[in-house]
Length: 483
Image (cartoon, rainbow, N blue to C red):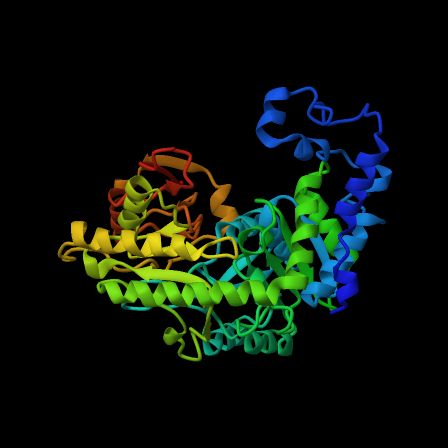
């Protein structure tokens, strides 16, 4: 990595020059550097509003970058070890969908785990690509979906030699990593592309002793949520591509769905965050791992909780574990993860990333402080003392293997019947049902609704999970395929 090059931040530098020039603005946005909306300026600050600008020649244009944005993307590509990078301002959702659109046409197959984010299945609906699911399996104690076993991937390739690509989560929401290098090799040997959803893996590129990044493993494309663990603003992301990809084709695909009014606030945050990680990432993520290890040790001393980490690794479905993740199993104190999550928020003013039926997840970054971790530890100890109970009758799994009867696109656009979810056993879902976060569908279009799934959804509702995906905002009714 060229350290002198990584010290540059071309978009940020161009914005500073534009401010100095004091250009009279007769273009959009209409707030005119904040003057037209004093309340917004008071809330966000003059500095922020003054660089919320439209694309101009000195600032380049994201849909066809030739100067400062182009240079910023080149520098980012070098930092991540990619052939090319593309700044995304509609989140990693847009990056995941651009990956799939770039390599799969209607009717073509893609091999992927079922515990993908909804953005990947939405891409199948929009593109007409057909999923070949490699079921990830479940850790029987923790109830969480695992990674992709290379043997299962090899079997899927053998049974579907016409598939165009394989998509891998690197890592999963819970921090579990598949053997991405081996799976990449399997994909390339079969003439398939390897795509990686690295929404939770930005730090893999910059820290020591962390799981392998997709680009270093030889992947063809990777969608990286810089805003999650990289420090940029929410909604900003980067799409990385390897040497086998046609960058012009990828840009054309991105421009099908990405806004033509790209936010310079988001792009400059990508530029500055990349610079920070390239120059300081090793120290940043060493500190994060140290804090996570400290938190695990302290929480395990409480008893009743289980903070899992690399001790889970089995070399196959759990090839590695992301040590920066603070994932905590809660069922042994008789509380669902969502219940602990809500108690922490409502009674202790502590906001976690996720609470599901058996686990909570805290995302740690360099912005966290040890005394805040001690506050979390103290709160968890008190919650155990005040609220623990017998765990009898609690559901202990987060993944139900789907029965796919209809292709996602066909089911989504099919003639539909709207009915009570509790009466829908045996029908084919025409829409999603999911708890958010993590945004992994319980049901996706084209999947058969079973009694087990209905029971799971009702139990999730009872435990306070936020259910989304259906037209019915209460998720009491569901659209099913008319037969």
